[in-house]
Length: 177
Image 1 (cartoon, rainbow, N blue to C red):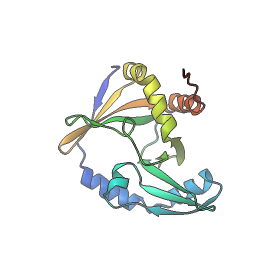
Image 2: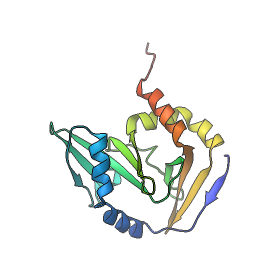
Image 3: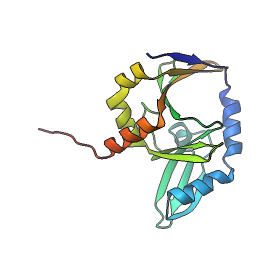
């Protein structure tokens, strides 16, 4: 492990309330209109249920009626790294979003300060993580986020590295016998 960073404790209920308030920000629709050329509308998924627990914060409806499920990450600052959550709860050994099955198609990182948005396809992101897991855990800082009753752990991986690995994973090569 390259290093560990710990910060002030957070409260999931407070964070969830804040994310529900942030769900109505205009930045989301502006981002989706730019990211999906055939954007039609969107619907929030604010209820605590299977969809929310499996990464569906919002459903995007395209003009052909296709739906796209998105896990939204709104970041107040402006960083050059993604937080790749590998443990949702260290104490309960609960896998983070990069290591568990998700219902969402994409993770959208929005850096509020700069307005930069990154749409990450979940299967390719998870494949990139599996391929690079050992290397990334040795090379990058582990960020420990204390919450009320549990600790979340993730790697701080440079955006450029994640994007390159997703691009490589998008065109998968496998050998079968």
